Length: 196
Ligand SMILES: Nc1ncnc2c1ncn2[C@@H]1O[C@H](COP(=O)(O)OP(=O)(O)O)[C@@H](O)[C@H]1O
Ligand SMILES: O=C(O)C1=C[C@@H](OP(=O)(O)O)[C@@H](O)[C@H](O)C1
Ligand SMILES: [Mg+2]
Image 1 (tube, rainbow, N blue to C red):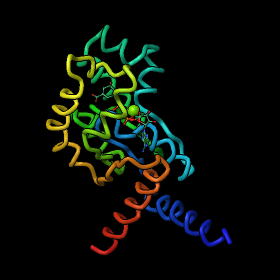
Image 2 (image 1 turned 45 degrees about the vertical axis):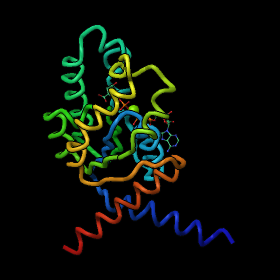
Image 3 (image 1 turned 90 degrees about the vertical axis):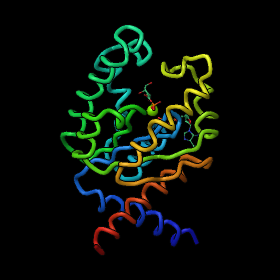
Image 4 (image 1 turned 60 degrees about the horizontal axis):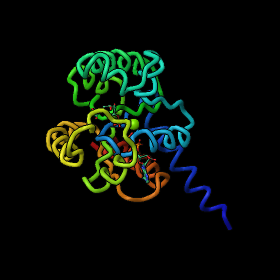
């Protein structure tokens, strides 16, 4: 009974994996969109390595993101983020989940554009807020009105995230379902490229 279902799921993974080739898959979008959580699942589905750029930054600096912002400020953080992203994207295939500001930075965006297929996980304010307000690890949201700050960031950044190769709506559904939607979007994009 379960065999046909397994076949469908396997072919989704296989087709998405074939569409990616040796490129990287890079997840971009605002804080709380699910880049880190969904990226990990997508990588495991595709059978390729997963790297979260914030984790990599924390590993090389031996500091947390919050400590880096506090000690050196956002500009230095962005410079480090650019260097780390450039290195991570030199070879592939990998799934790389970025921090929310990475794609907004022009130099980092250039590395992402060259380094593979970018996917914007696009979510509305309520979904993002529900997720980010549970943790206080994000320095940019340590403001008097963090929900308003998040909305301001949406307004400033959404036109830039829209430059990603693919857009997937990050809805209030399980992470596994979001991961499948990323795989489907990869396959759709491949089809469109083949047709044109
Ligand atoms: N589709 C989802 N359904 C439920 N919770 C999610 C979903 N995507 C992410 N989350 C949760 O929301 C929080 C923020 O997700 P995260 O992956 O860290 O976002 P980002 O890396 O984009 O900032 C985490 O606690 C994560 O487990
Ligand atoms: O939006 C941003 O500028 C940031 C997002 C964070 O990553 P997540 O998007 O994974 O939360 C992290 O890189 C840092 O706090 C800055
Ligand atoms: Mg993250």
